[in-house]
Amino acid sequence: MSDYRFEIRQSKDGLYYWHFVAPNNEICCVSHMYTTKEHAVYSARVMKTHAAEAPIVDDATEHKGPAEHNEGFLEEWSKNPIGYFT
Image 1 (cartoon, one colour):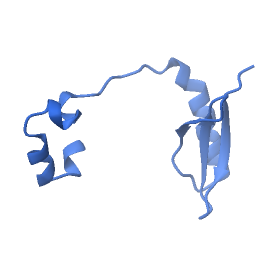
Image 2 (cartoon, one colour):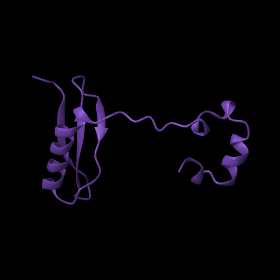
Image 3 (cartoon, one colour):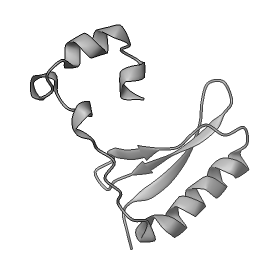
């Protein structure tokens, strides 16, 4: 039996979400917010069912690294700091 668990939570504004929690009580993953508890539970069940089979896809690219490894990073970033990483 695993000590990992999904915890269904409710936010102050009444929305529902889940945490995936490790045996040491560290939160490993947090879901989106859902308007009903049933949707949050359903989402946790879907994650539980399919996560083990999901591939790990590396979408990391060089331009998203630290500034010292990217010539011109700060200049480009200063022009559009939010859009640079999207």
